[in-house]
Amino acid sequence: MHQAPRRSTPEPATAARPPVRTAVGPPVDPVVVGERFQPVPGGALPRPHPSDPLMAALLATPAAPVFAVTAGTVRRAPAQVAAGAVELRAPDGSAFVLLGGSTVAWVVDDEEPVVAGAVLGIVAGSPGDPPGEPLLVLAIDPSGTQVDAVALLVGLPDPGELDLMGSDPAAGVDPYRLDLELAASLVRGAT
Image (cartoon, rainbow, N blue to C red; front, side):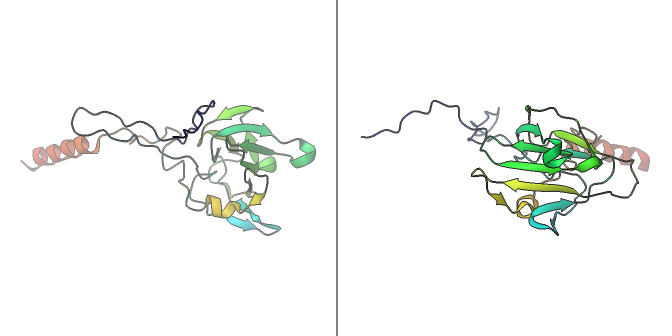
């Protein structure tokens, strides 16, 4: 019987994870939050850019973070190529190029590895200011071909809703325990 050769490289991050043993019941698969995210919080729907329908344009709220769409390595684009742009190269060879121009202050360094949802930059301005120029997103597949960025971004989770920034005071609160505490306070208040 022929066996496939053993892989000399580690399994990709997307490989199945082993089940987690629990004290009661059968093993449970671990929860994976996501491998791709929207680049800006707030539910901004990506739109095709007028000059390049495969490029996505997103209105970003001033002072909002710009997130890594996927895990990978960040590289700043040279000013002569695209001022204010970063390239996020994924392990599979695909890439997302985020063009923020002067409206985004990038906080990552060249060749810095990042996880999906990591903060790459901050949109210039103060909360409450009107949005400036849109953030542009260009998507390139592993073969180097530009693909429809709008189609790739629509439906991805918003990292702000998943509290990746750690700003949600309700994160980590046990809703069942909270319900019991609220019910007990209502009973005490009724007597």
